[in-house]
Length: 266
Image 1 (spheres, rainbow, N blue to C red):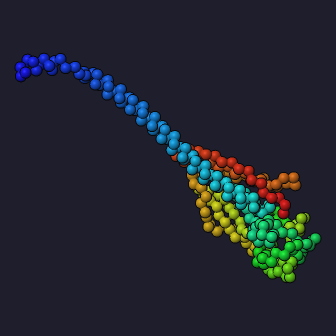
Image 2 (cartoon, rainbow, N blue to C red; image 1 turned 90 degrees about the vertical axis):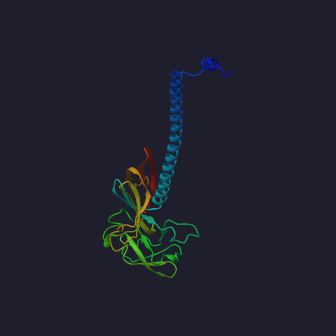
Image 3 (cartoon, one colour; image 1 turned 180 degrees about the vertical axis):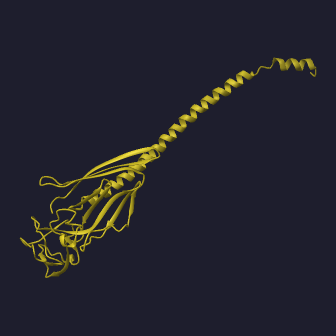
C-alpha cells in the first residue's frame, strides 16, 4: 500500500483538464456572461426609457390640460402673441355672475346703445358685481385691453343701484352688438425661460397697461422647443391658439401638439 511506485502510477492514471481546455472554458464563460450582461442591461435600459417617456408624457399632458382650460376661458380677442415663445391673454371671471349656481361666462345688459354713459342696466340681478372689472366689446389686446387708460374697454363697477343698474368708473367707449359684458379676473402669460415653461398671472389694470410683475410659476422643465401660434377669429370661425412643445430628458424626446379654440363673441 505504501509502495512509492504504486502511488506514482495512480497519479499518472488520473484524468483531468489540460491548460488549453481551461482557457477555452474560461473564454466561453466570459462570452456567455458578456452576452447575458448586455441582454440584462438592454432590458433595464428599455424599462428605464419607458419610465422616463411616461413621466414626460404625464408632465406634458398636465401642462396641456392647464393651458387648454385657461385658454378656453380667455376673454374674446384679448390675446397677445408677444413672441413665438410668449403668449398673453385675459381671463374671464366665471365666479362673478349669478347664474343659479352655474358658472357663467358673460352677462347681458338691457340698454340698446349705452355709448357715452357711465352705467349699464343688467338683465339679471348680479348683486356681486360691485367692484368687479368688466369688458364691453373688446376687439384687441392693445389698445382695447392693455393700452392707455383712455382707450381701454375695461370698466370697473363702482356701485349697484337697485338690483340692475351698474355704475361704471368711466363712460362706455363702444357697445357690444350682442349687448354682452364679460367680468375679467386677471391676465395670464405663458413663456419660455431657458428650458423652463413659465406661467405668470397678473392683475388687470384699468389705469394703464396690464403688466406682468414676475410672480412666476414653473410648469415644465427640459423644454427643448416651444412655439405658440395665434389666429384671430373671423365672422365665420373662432380664434385659434396652437401650442407645440418638446420635452427632452435623458436622450428621450416627446413632442406635444394642441389646437385650442377661443370664443369670438365680444
